[in-house]
Length: 436
Image (cartoon, rainbow, N blue to C red; front, side, top):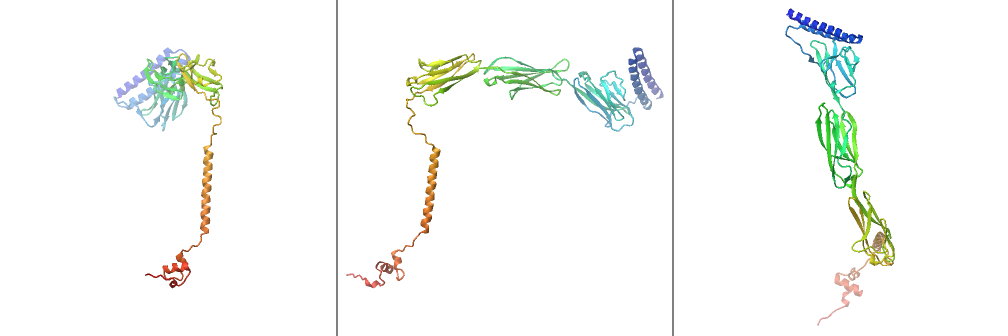
């Protein structure tokens, strides 16, 4: 047992002395010598710690580092080129040494000393309870699991994962067709290159979101290139509308590219009556104006009369038609036709010429609302009158007697009452009737 311990300790010391001699032979400058001196000290401390373990533990026994709740750290996500902060914290420290190792388990900081020759690592804070180190100008090669280690028996470890985000390059949007015609289908692609993780691409046409078909490729340098393909049909309303490719990635915000649509469409035509505003009567003049728009702008505008010829004395100036001294022979349908390279369109106006005195002396239009109001007032007045009359007759009601009532006071029966009422006699014996 003692031989084994002595052999282990001798081996450790031999490695330390060899490392120191090697560094001494390699370095001639003061700076390099100082660096290797510090590094050798760290190696010596680690060797002494291992020697302590070798003398305590029996031959063949090994104690692996354990993950402890006493030592804590945090995962770090950082954008390439920016700075990452790694913090090793001890809740209850018993004067044990704290060190930070890189993913290759090389010592970055041993207490407040930096044996690793990488000036991007800088000490931010060192105390009995924390070792905080900054890493500037982070690159993809720095990604991995960093180890916070506390020199106890057995050693305690905590792990901090550094994840490096790489933003994509400027999105590239391409269109299959530069100029479109209404009703046609077109295709656009948007590419976000060399990012980590893969970007997400969304499409907007104006204020409406459209679905695209993404394709993700992993490049040789472990980066992602995403291409999204969009297919849709255009209308004339899409002319001048932007199509926007939006790239969503945790390393960037508001990353987008856009392209404006150029859509050609056939003309839209509408005939407007400039004069007269009312009926078209014999002897009057007629002026029609043809309004149109299209892309490209219509170059040809024609006036014609359907199933007949335009009157010989009609004047056509550009998009306007002017006819003097109308008569009924001019009745018919007049058409304005506008055309461009996409197609043609037209609008019709039907002319009907009335008599010269048409519309004169005609009954004036009666306002039905006024009539309704008058009728309502009359009905209301009649109802009020009926109510007043009813109350008047109810107050002046008289007492009326029938013939029976006039002699009823002194009569023994109804017959006697009638006789008394008609004759005014009180004795029924004065009138006698004889039967033979």
